[in-house]
Image (cartoon, rainbow, N blue to C red; front, side, top):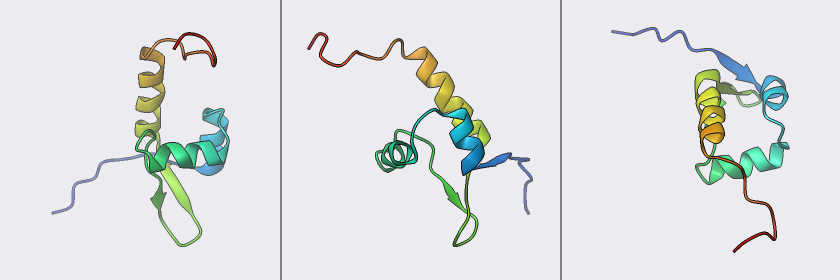
Length: 73
């Protein structure tokens, strides 16, 4: 039996409009498990689950301000 989940998938253009990071940084975060994994829907097209990306954004908001380089230790 197949259960429909009604997921919304977003392409790279939409992701980059939502997340002000370069593609390389997003890829590095993904490879370290710090960002939702992309979903390969073909050999040339990848997408992300919108709900997972929004959860990541919410988690970033809840983590407080980012440390400034060279401040503290």
